[in-house]
Amino acid sequence: MTFFMFGKYSGEALEAISPKRTATARELVKKLGGKVKDIYALLGQYDLVLIVELPTMTDAMKAAVALGRETGISFCTAPAMTVADFDKLMVEA
Image (spheres, rainbow, N blue to C red):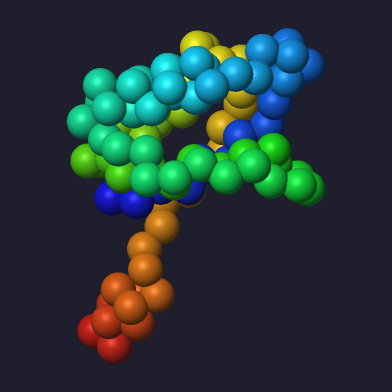
C-alpha cells in the first residue's frame, strides 16, 4: 500500500535537521517491512512529505508513531492509489 506521510516540524525538530535523521527515518520504515519511495520538502501547511510503501494500514500507523517519537516531527498519514487504479475501481463500482 502507498501512503503519503505529511510532516510538520516542531521547533526542536527543525533545529535537528540532518541527513543522518533522514537515514534513520528510512531505516525505521524498512524495519516495518516498508520502503521510503521519496521524500520532498514542502512550503505551506506541511514541511515535508514521505511517500512510502507499507504492507498494511496498521504498519502505516506504527510508522507515523515511531517516526514522531524518533524525529519530533508530527505526521498526518493518508493512504493513496494511482489514478489508473482509482479509475478501474470507479468502473467496477
